[in-house]
Length: 83
Image (cartoon, rainbow, N blue to C red; front, side, top):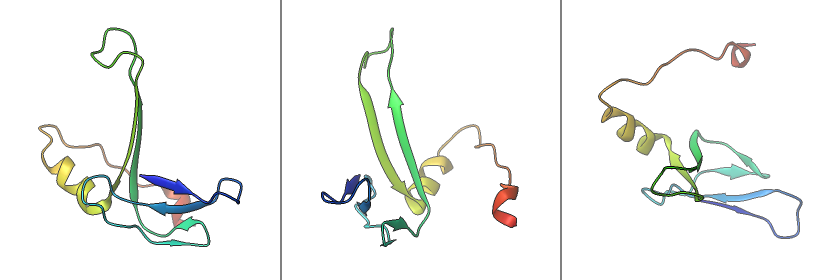
């Protein structure tokens, strides 16, 4: 769950994990922790036709979620972070 400052143009004020309610660390509007953000738009032929769901998970809750997958997540390194 995200909250933005009212008087600042799109400045992040708070991010809370939707699963465990942990408040993630933010400094000067910059998120300082890993977060898994989802925005899912459901289209035709789904049971949620026309709905948009959005949520954030902290890294621990993300790890718990993907540990339950039958097929593992695909993992690769982002070389742009290494420079």
